[in-house]
Image (cartoon, rainbow, N blue to C red):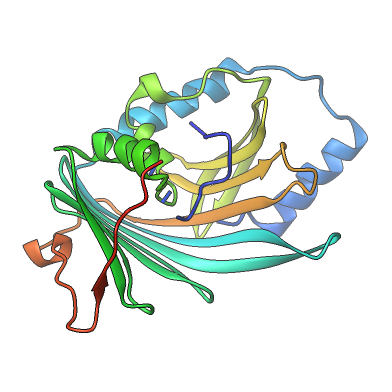
Amino acid sequence: MMHASLPALALAAVLTAAAPCALAQTTDAAATAAPAATVDPEAVAALHRMGAYLGTLQNFEITAETSRELMLGADQKFDLDGVTTYRVRRPDRLFVENNTSRKQRQFIYDGQHFTVYAPTRSYYATVDAPPTIGELLDVAAEQYGVELPLEDLFHWGDPANLPQDFESAVHLGTAMVDGVQTDQYLFRQPELDWQIWIQQGSEPLPRKISIVDRTDPTLPKYTATLGWNTNAAFDARTFAFAPDADDQAIQFRSE
């Protein structure tokens, strides 16, 4: 799953808060008896079930309420909140809009071209694109340094792309996320600590993701709460980009 850095809300693609009492109970338990590092096979299996289910989704929409910790000076953190919307029609249509109080970006893919658009600044850049979303994500990251917010959600759809280098994997219990009953899991990899809340039942959707970057001494955290429409309908205009008269084309910078 997770890349070495926090999801770059530059995308990412592969895309909720647990009840306070559940979090308090987890914290109290950890404070009294921190378990030895272990990899629970059931926690890993839950990821694989989730990934397999994500791979079956064809037309879907995600609304993610996000929060990213940033530094003010040397020793003070603040939160930058935002909303990221995904509209997806597999295998070759994608629209992503990322909004925070500081930046607005749109990412549009129509099966032939990929555009990054900054509507508040009236700039856009368009390049030729490969024929599938998965290939697009790889090209965007490797050639142009563009990672879509929560792009791991797309990589997870292929079980081969799920993480393998766990130092620990634990099922913490159950929690309600926006009225949905979930199982909460905690994972550690060499550079990341992350939690995921997976919906119970026949639709194991990720409902919340929380990531801590262990490579940064300030341990910044990124959190996303995910709302899903797994049977969305889109028309062709959803994935078409038409610049306004005042918009100015610029070039992608290659990596």
